[in-house]
Length: 200
Image (cartoon, rainbow, N blue to C red):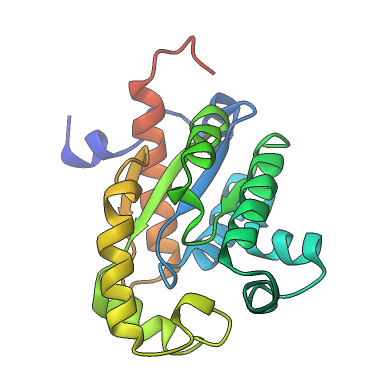
């Protein structure tokens, strides 16, 4: 067996992989700027699944933007709403779901992710995250005020150990999005191959 053979899923087609997922979703977790939405849209297209951005669904449910929710209601109310929306979405899978950066910090949300999907941590280093988030801090309430670098350092320290609980980890870096998509497919395939075939 070659190194490439060892990396590749043992599913003969992407359809086989999706069939083995059954009703389970692929859930992308990670820091703001990790590329969850960009990678998620392309991943969903490759797998023939729907793509859902949890933040967009939260805004639709609330009738206001996330910065507005933070400003008017506070983070605690936002997180409660976020949990309800993510769990509702997961119960209607399968899909590729991009979660907000803080969603996976909630224990109930993590339990729902485990019950209804395969979690993928899109891991990116500080310099990559900083370069990306500087382009759009206005719609990221936790990064909007103060020094984004210091805030990212703090968030990485707080969130990293919980992101590491995801089923698989794929490094998000400055390569073509399609490269990361293929690596996610390979990683999910390996994870599914390691599961007993009787499990859904």
